[in-house]
Image (cartoon, rainbow, N blue to C red; front, side):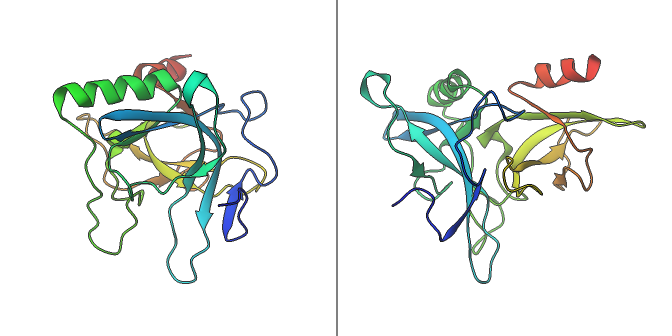
Length: 203
């Protein structure tokens, strides 16, 4: 499948993600295939232009092959080939999550929305797929949560903005996803660990 397929929306529109221009930097995707980890760098995000249903925003990935060489970009359909997938800030974070799940048998679970829902629908996806934590402040309060998906950006040359489930006082996650720029302040920080997100709020 040709990269920048016209059947898909892409973000950023004209170039691959770099860690020098985009404020959230790089992301990495990994999936378990028959007991082996495939991991690669997210170089863009895309969404299928469906005439009826709104599809989830998903990654375009350059998987690392033999000798550490990146392959050609691949459109990843989250949850369609395997439910054992993760998105994190580093390849090491993804590998650590895969090793932990391989050891304990506690893999991310399928979405809970039932038939007709996209396997990575943000309101129903298992948050364990995302090794990403959100922190933001405004004049009145601070926000801390876990990323569960992506929303198209206002500027098509930017990255998608995170959809977030916020932590409640008892440590559980709110069932409702929140949107940056709607329910959340613009310009939040996406961290690779919960501690790093908390440190951002403490600055």
